[in-house]
Length: 336
Length: 298
Image 1: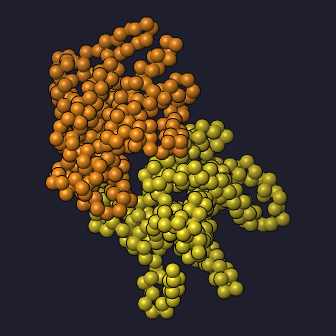
Image 2 (image 1 turned 120 degrees about the vertical axis):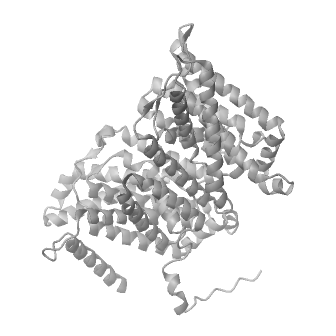
């Protein structure tokens, strides 16, 4: 019940915040569209980073194909709204137009998530048998293959890109899903299934010896992570109103990895911090114009040399307040 | 049949380029277990050094000595770049987690690409012709002198490399380091020096590939290393990463199949084929074609 009330408050705050930022609440006050766009894209980055952290940080399976699943989500959802948008709106015609759009967005994102999950399953089942660098390079390969195939589908624009997507997503929707992603991932990580994932990360053979079905756990974590990337892609498409496969190259996957590594692998707070920091750094360095990416890459190398575990390491926001709390009792080791 | 043979020749000459780059990946992976993402960019730098050298040495007409000077100059310059990258970016994080090393490599790669765009300008440059050119016709198959040069030079370099690894003391030390870095250190091998030499060698080979590609496809740009680097890495994995002959076989296979796909299917799938092959191989034989079957690793 308490959670339900909190969720309602969260949603209300988001939509009021959206109205406030765009100038709909207080007349005469609004932030610049540029600022709003940066903040919204940061939200999409949070979804991507937190979801990738589930597979890279907590399960310890190094995947660099996240952009591929994002691409699937973006294109599938865009196709749904473009091809079936009017029919879906018609089916819920009794609702006011704003709600029709919400329903349409939710349906599009749901289908996007489902398709990305299916793709994640198809990619995950064969490739998660591999480990380390091999897995990394196979996921990179799958990501690129997904991109090249989308590039060759004419129904979604091919090399021209997919334009004319209605702007259904906004600041509030993006942060609603960012919040949901953080909630779901932190719940998963703290569940017994989450401990299974961490066990696989720490020592796969030992986990298997303890009776963990490692393949199943890895695939589930991969599928969940892919579905979330699909949602992020759908929001991305319906926020920018135009998608092109060039946005989903392996460079994008690298960006997401950089976010989670800067923040600290295996820390959800770290992923959020990394996602925000990434966009703050890349946008903040804009004043240096052409030196921007040179400075950014140098900064990245320096961060890796000075603080290889990322800013937060494994720590969460919670752990900074931990001393004031009751220490969780550790179950005694089972004898024998 | 003539078309097929023609495609085969084209494929082999492209494949030799991939093979040369793949050697650098496989050697570095052998000693450091690192996917050196910056390697493709060293290849790009090689092409640019070659470009500037040949413009500086503008003679009356393309001549062989000049081509040789350009090639060796580029190789030397890039060997130096390789040593610098290793010393200042990778050595400080060598003992850190694998992922840290990988992100550092991505950082170095981004740095080289963006610095190159800044210094050389983002637009493509046209590589001057280095050697006198001629076409040969063998049974309807056209062999350009560039293609023959590419195949011959890369073959020569590969043979030299193999000799170096198998017959010299340094080569032996490299094999020892790739077999077990800590044990090699205990045996008195200066591992830092060997790793630096490995980077220098790999980078020199990449530079040679850069000059060769400049001769064949005379258009170079600061981002040309990304895709070539990635495909060469795929070639290294395909042949069995850490395995020197494997990298050559992988490179030739990737190059040939890419040219075949472009010739017989569609050019839009050109970049997907390498990954398609890679995925099939990794799923069926994860250690690559030569993989562990051959113990010799660098």
